[in-house]
Length: 287
Length: 235
Ligand SMILES: Nc1ncnc2c1ncn2[C@@H]1O[C@H](COP(=O)(O)OP(=O)(O)O)[C@@H](O)[C@H]1O
Ligand SMILES: [Mg+2]
Image 1 (cartoon, rainbow over the protein chains, first blue to last red):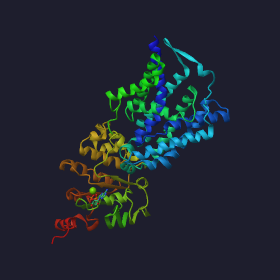
Image 2 (tube, helix red, strand yellow):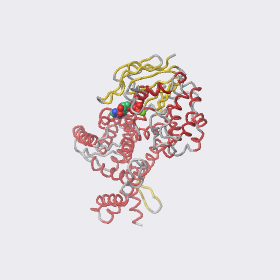
Image 3 (cartoon, chains in turn purple, yellow):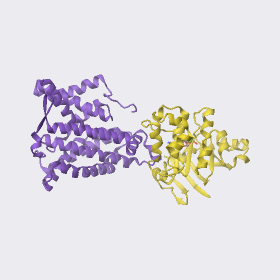
Image 4 (cartoon, rainbow over the protein chains, first blue to last red):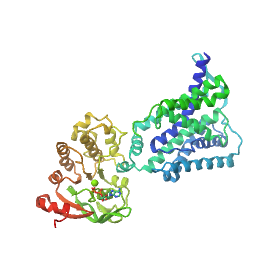
């Protein structure tokens, strides 16, 4: 029974990693841009939520609703003003620029909010748990997982069922011909990054409610997100959820054997999956 | 009435000059054929008109306005649609999605919609849920033409729609042109193969080395004259 419990906790943890990764996966799928500042943007959003909670005295869920459009605007502007200039045949400029951006965000947060660790206060719900058959799971981890499934479902609907989603896929296939359809690639990319930042805001809520955060923890969160995206298959959103779950389960299983093995076993699972399926679990047909 | 015209249009790829002062006119409701050998500058001319490459000098007028400085999406929104050389369907999109995306920058009520495009090319209706690139070359060309029609353009630019297709398929595709004309769209067809283009065109322009070398109606142009304009005068 203890195993079932461990695996369920791992699956739920995977939901958190999938939330971290979904925005990354979306942006990569559309513009082949690897954003090394993604983890720091999650931390930035967590501070933004905390700031709104503190200043306006509203519930964190309300703060998310206020922070999300602000993060959309930040993502839109970031893409329009900076990231769009790095896109091209060479993959190095986006890596260098987003690496620099990561350092800029960390230092700006240190200046603005100090190095003290923070937490987003959610009240009694933080410790509440529900019985799920034989196992008892925390309400917050359950909400995290449900949010991850919902976010990925919504992104998939957007991608495959809407006019904007068609434009995302068309621009990613062939930006020149897309312009002949009246699509402005730079504006579509900016919208995509804006949407990714809305997902980042949702991820930031759970990051900040579940554990302490400080300005420097972004890059460590980014690693799990990357691993989830890569073993899921680059650009596949459901693959990203599967990837997150694999890493989450590996971590809790490893941690239940020996707490020191928790992080390591996640990375080992990542390597094993890549050895067996070098293109990830759900590779895209066209790359 | 002139709908679209270029005046002294030049275009460059880096240092290489591909167009040398091209003057072209297209009347409302007219079908114009531009013929010329490989490398004559036909595609460059179409790409300049639809805003994909900036005109180095000269002017492009559409419906009375100077559109030379506009971007490709802006020109598309005005009603100039392009069927690019090599069809260029979007591989991630199904046949139907490829058609639907043709309206992204210009949504108008008019002759052309999903159902009328399927009536024009019935084989596409059966295959509408297939990936665009799973189709035969001829069917892909039909999707590319349909995709351009979906925005109910005022001008349709067709770049070598017969390229790489069997003669019977080319005939099928050219059979659609009169129906496209009836819908009120002016058409420019660019071809290396003279046969089909001359049959549908009201007027013919021949290009060589970035310049227009001959212009006239199909009835008045003999094969010998076209041959000279196409390959250069015989010495
Ligand atoms: N992208 C490009 N870069 C450099 N030169 C080009 C490019 N595209 C075409 N050219 C050159 O421009 C000239 C005209 O080409 P193009 O307009 O494609 O001719 P056509 O369509 O009549 O075959 C050719 O000499 C060709 O080599
Ligand atoms: Mg050409």
